Image (cartoon, rainbow, N blue to C red):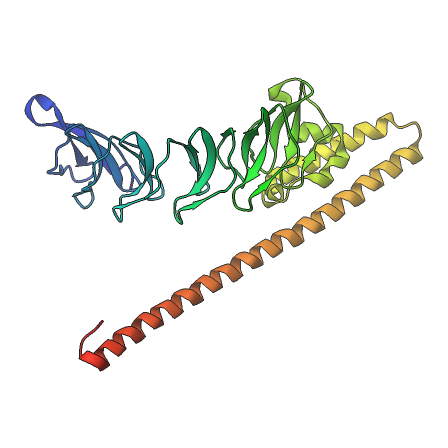
Length: 321
């Protein structure tokens, strides 16, 4: 557990730091000039003005030393070496070969990095770089990152390499499949997945929400991103807001017949959209299952191949290869 250990003072005049197990009271033998809390099994520590990582559960101190280091998350940390930044895996002591001027963010397994005054995206697990370069880039959320190109903002998907066609005066991070953007002096909602800008414009940040957009234009329910349909509570709020919008629109119609026609049209639109998204989510689940099966099969083949090589070694030389 992350909070199993606490940092305590030790050494002459309490100038050093070590870790104590909260449950047993046992202190680690290792002492450090400075230490931070444990994250993902590892703690940042300082030894002779250099950073490294310490695992209080095993007592292991990484051999590598750095000019700077971040906390460890998902087995990965940012480190600084000779004025450049890269990635380090404490569990394996692996250090990425690539060097960057800056590492700005790390979300959804993609890092936003800076090289020679340009921003791009790097996948530490494979060492893969995106070919596209930007004047500025934010972090990846829901597969998309806001980026800046020639003083305009848009969105980029590092998984597919797609850059949205729409350009904005400003763009926020993507959450639940949509983002706040500005153009024409107004706030709008935008869905990078389908390239749709909601019809409702907003004056204030706090008023800018999908529910408010649907109350003003119920027909925009058709353009909600698939990711929103994975959350039943969230989609229920959207349905409620759409219903309120339909009620308000019907009350403005000149005749009952027109109101009934409008309401029926929205109802059919919602029904078709929900059925479509059910199929999309089912296809996503099927694709994930197939990918997991494929990965399991590759692992099985690799293990069998390794065993065959060992057997071959025994047959040829009487010992394992």
